[in-house]
Every structure is written in structure tokens, then in C-alpha cells.
Length: 516
Image: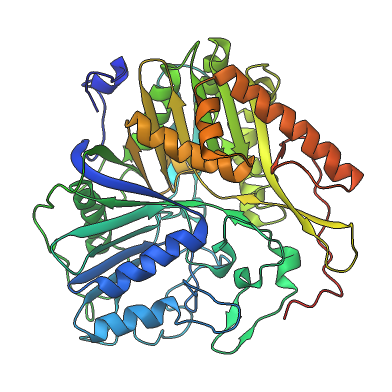
């Protein structure tokens, strides 16, 4: 991504990415599920030629635009109707090695209406992910290498992408982290009583309002792209569809990219980044791709005094990246990281991540980072009046599922986001997709929108803070301390940020609340 404002690492000829930077794109950030799936749903309905998508987790009855009173058409019904109208609709679905909640396993376990039913139906292929067998090492010798052997039970095709024509002469792609699962749909309010986040028993009723007690509000992001970078998202889909491990070749056909060259649509340079495990697609990427991890490491290595690093991530489990976060803090960079309070607590995934944490020597490193004065490790929560008792409040965590990093320096700015967690799995052998860009004004505006939601302050106030790294760090730390105090006193907090390690959110008891 070399230009007059590029850091030295951006011109490194030794970089190994699947796709180069592409000029001439228009890109938007879609914050939280309501905004993201409203745009994706509209794009589905506009498409006249093709709709291609990759799924890791999903609900076959996911409502993209749920309403409190009148349920809307679910995802697969929309796609089936488009296929009925001669739109080429295809999807690649992750096939987990073990039964995994919120996935659509082949054959799901029964035949899915409208899928693989011949011409005019949705064409679906399922893709099993490999594990990882090799040396876990740092390219910079930041820690001792270790031999690791993870079976396919730990592998995941984790990408979430949608690509389609726009119904006219253009094309659009969506790259992000929000799964088409009802619990992942949310608004920027993150209201713990919003029943639209609870799974529907199609077509008439909720499966149970008690789900709101178990399922916290969730924050996440999609990026909408128009322009040449869409071609790389499309190329990734074609690679995965054509080389899927469960191809259903008797009812699905080999896909040829429906467009050879996508015209420019804006002025932003965008690079599509991936993680692909070695030998996943032997004829195409035999050595795999760790471009997302390389971008993280390179950007962090170039950050120092006068720099601001802003991170949102579900996990914090990659030793090499966390080592570089600490090194940047030592050089004087200010680090603000919003991390999930207790990711996947009590689940198989949660236990597995703790094991990866142990293997990657992370506990000591995480404590080292958390204790540095230039670092704020925080989480998100929310508060709303309790309708049962005047003057009382309902508190909840807000599950951080977004995976983004922005680095602001006096000379350049870079941002990356998509599906990849700061985790050994996402950076080494899960299939992931991120985008990256170096448009300072656009990135500043996006981060200001996020801060406006979390703190909350105006976008203009957030932009002013971004330009003052030390003031921003102190603002987050001070508000987190005040919010934690308000939580424990039972009063209303000033914003939504809390200390990551020491905050304890109470269990949600919604007994007696009429959610109808």
C-alpha cells in the first residue's frame, strides 16, 4: 500500500499477500447488525446476476430485518426467491468436525428447502477445515518456537462474505464478522431487552424470551466495498467453492467468476487480506496465507511515540501480536483495546481458547500488557432502566464480536477489520478475511463513530480526542473507572466502557418483565 504517506513496511517486497492493494474503491463501515443486514438484505433484492456468500455460523431462519410486530422473510427464503428469478445464488458453508452450536452442518441434518434442488435453487457446498501441524514461531524471534499439532476439530472456515452485482452496472461486496445468527443481530443501543435478538420459531413466535437472559447484546461490524477490491473477495469465494471438500458435484457446478474486471467506484485504496492454512487448497494456495497477521505485526512494529492504537477484538490470544502491542507501548504508543469480557465462557470454544492461551505463553504477556501505563484494556457494557422498579437499572455486558485495529501515527494511518480474531487460530490456520486501508480521514471518521457509540460523545468530540493520544487514553481509563463504580453502586453510568479484568457484570434476571 505504498504512497507518499506509507510507512516503510508498506513497501517491503518480501510481503506475501494473496491480493495486492487495489485503487479506486468506495468503502463504508456498517456498525452493528441492524445497519449491516439492512444493507445486505437490500443488496440481495437488487441483484440480477449473482449472489455468492461464505458462512461459518448461521441460522436457516435468520431474520435480516426483524420487526417487533411483524416478522420478515428469513435469509434463505430471500435467497430462494432470488434464485427463482434466475439469479445465480451460491454459498460455501463451514462443515465443523464436531457438532458445533449455531452451524448449518451437512446435510443440516436434513435437507434444506431450496438448497441443492437442481436448476433454479441455491447451490451450496460444505467445506471442512484442516487443523494445524507445525512450528508456532515468531518471524521476529519474539518468543521460543513450539511444535503444535491441532486436529481438524480445531479448524474453522471463519470468513463471512457476501458478493453480488448491484442490479445495474456495478458490483458490491460485504466483508466482516457478523454471523447470520439471530443472537448476532443488534442495534447501536445494545438494549438487553430487545427481543429481536432472540431466535424466532418461524413464522409466528419467539423460541423463548428467556433467551435474553442468556444472550447478551453484541457489537460487530461489516464493511461494504465497491470497486476493484470486490474482485478479490470474489476470487476468494470461487477458490473456496471450487475446492470445497463436500462439493455435491452432481447438483452443483464449478463456478467461473461472472465478471473479469470490476471498474473503479471511488478513490480509496483497499487491500483484501486472508488467513488460509497451508494445503487447504493445494492447487491454489499450497503454502497458505497469513497476510492478516503480517499486517498486524507490521503496523504495530511501526507505531511508537505520538501514535494511537485502537483495537476491538473478541479474543486476545496471539502471543506475537500481543508482544508487539507491548513493544509499541514501551516505545510510547498509546493503546486502547476493547476486548470481550469473557469470550465463550463455559463452552468448548472457551476451553479450547484457554488451552491455546497456555500453549502460547500468553498469561504472563497479557498481564505485562495490562499493567503498562500506556495501555487500557477495556470491555463494553450497557445499562437501561428496569421497567419493574423505578430508579433501578438492568446491567449487562455487550459482547464484543468485532475484530478491528486502527493505528494513527503523525505520518500515516492504517486500519484493518473483518473476521480475524487476535488469536493463534485466526492468525495461523482458520480461514479468515479482513480488509485494510490507509485513508486517514475515512479511518478517523469511522473510529469517531465507534467512540461516539461507546463513550458516548459526539463524533466531533471523538475526532478531537483521536488527535490527542494521551488525552484519549486517559478519557477511556477515567470513564471506565467511573462506570465501574456506578455499576457497583446501582446507578446509571456515564458511558459503556469498563475495565476488562476487574469488572463483574451481574447475571440478567428478567423475571416479571413483559417483553410482548
